[in-house]
Length: 117
Image (cartoon, rainbow, N blue to C red; front, side, top):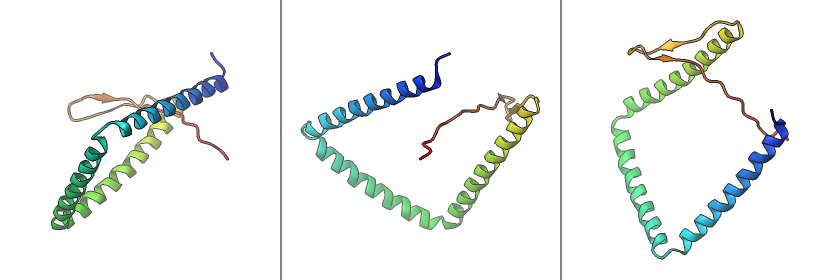
């Protein structure tokens, strides 16, 4: 197995290359005739869409509040389900859940790194 530092360094180099290519792409788009006009038109359409959405939301205020409450409940239950699954896995138990169609789901865990300073 490779050293974790080597893998980290390779990821950093790939991210740098990715950033350079994305910047080149953006520069090419900016130089393309008509692109800026299209971007401005898209912005105007997004603003109109947002106004319509706000008007509809104001007409459905109680449902929107309920929707926000449901979102918080789902997030809370997801955290709880993750905690229970991790506890069971640490005890050596098998962890599976199934939906109403009897499709089985297994937990997936990932490790992420964050900058410490």
